[in-house]
Length: 387
Image 1 (cartoon, rainbow, N blue to C red):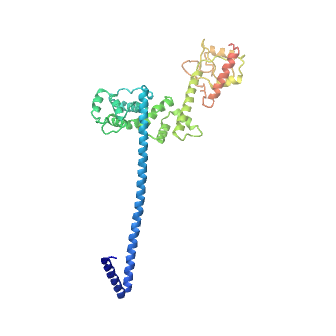
Image 2 (image 1 turned 60 degrees about the vertical axis):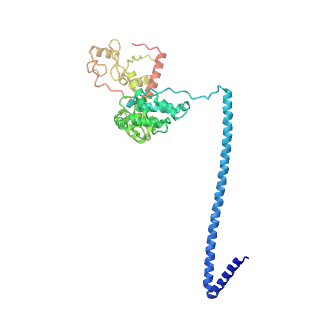
């Protein structure tokens, strides 16, 4: 041991012996505190060492990942060089593009047409995205589908990067154009139209298509549309909806149900118009069953009396009350009396007040049509002679 270190060791040993002789307990406490402090410091160093080891491992993993990415990049570069050399060797090889959609019309600044024009433009940009190199090319295409005045106005806001000022995509440019040229009260006006646009006599599907387009503009959800449709459909549909046992609960069910009911209702109206045409008198020698002929005539009787050539009036309720004999008909004709009631004088422009109205409902509509076809087939197969 070197002399300075030996002197320091002897002096420390002597000081320790002196302290032990003076107060052994104090010396013991001092040694315990010293050992505790050193143990704490050692634990801190061990934790720090563990953190350094973990960080070193992370760095090693990152290095391996970067090396793998570098290797992949080299492979992709080699593959791209092979592709470029192959395309150069092929010469005329070209990649197939999507079918070119028609160009939207030139927009001249009409406020009512801006939304339709923007929707068509977005459809064009999405459907033919492979026809444009980048967003700058799309912006230039939008500018060239504008009128001269709008082109001069908006082209000044195109930055050097080729993008529109404040917009990083072409679609955001179109949204910005809606804010510039659109109607700020468009939603309020659409809401007013939706609230007051009733079906009336328009076919349901035709009316619903126009109504739903305005409802979308007004921002109505499915529940709000369902509530308004119940209020705005025609009165005939409202009546028929009350007769349904299982009521529609959603918007889709309501539209489907109304479409079916409206089609049946209009077909029934068409059948009424068809049945209002002149009907040939039945022969007693016809092969048509009397019960079927009676039911068909009673259900489909026209609203007003029908006349034939010679001003002969058909008795509409003869099936229910029995056929009139020729003698009774001749007597009523000579007296110029109406054939149905035998009381009122016959006037063509006035309907008999006792003539019952036909009872046409959806329930007997299918039976009426089936009886009508059976009646027509039976007439065509038999020889019907008029008296």
